[in-house]
Image 1 (cartoon, each protein chain N blue to C red):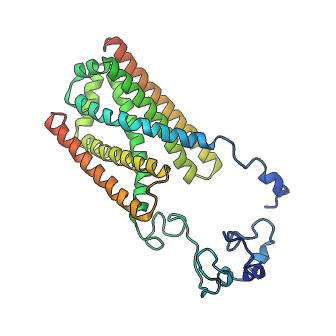
Image 2: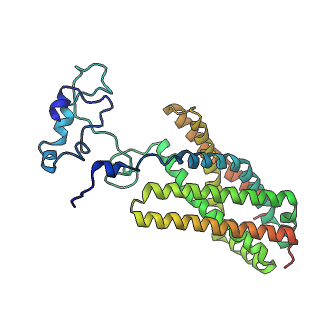
Image 3: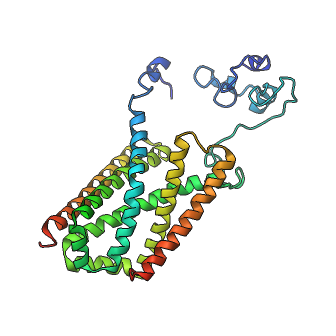
Length: 130
Length: 193
């Protein structure tokens, strides 16, 4: 298809958007934070798997555990949003599909991250009463 | 353009030859005037040759493993090697852990829902398919964790030579296997299974 745009008009605006490093750094910083958080979470899952509902409520109600769970969830959902975003950007090149998947990724991470954190806070603050 | 290549006046990084050349300003028929392989044969290989008089042979430029025929890591083009496998595994385990995080969100939701929904959640994860998924997620987690640390070390500029990269790849896989078995051993002993 013939294009009447000049090479200059096509090249304009395609340079650095001046925020590329931010995403890269946030991936690294969140991964550094996740190393201890995730190791602690594995310990937590082993404890929780051996216990029942009462134990889980008691465990989540501990302030240290509650804060660490919320931090782990927030960092993990942030990190996985960054990670899958790069995967989509690498492999999906059709503009509409790519935009749709990027938005879906953001919404899924935002929704389930928020649901998980709110649920943990509800249990921690109410002691399981509802 | 061919004349310029023969005279060796193209930039040393040599991005001007091949299929992409003249993409913007060369009319279509000009691209088909001679086979690309002939241009490559005539081109002085400045990046790899110690001497410009070294014998010149046709040489394909490297491409990403998945960009040519045969799909991902096709043995037709690239033999499987450790650093490639560890790279692909990092993405695959990352995507698996995405699902794992959603399972964690359902854990929190079921806990907030009360004793019945929590017991239901535990029954699903405690079933055989649930345990298989959790075992896979444990392995994915430890692999992604260790390989993530490997990437962080690379980001500091260390361990990027082939020998170190292969050695750290073996180390990462060994850690993932050992840590997964250890965690499931501990889970079995403490009554978590």
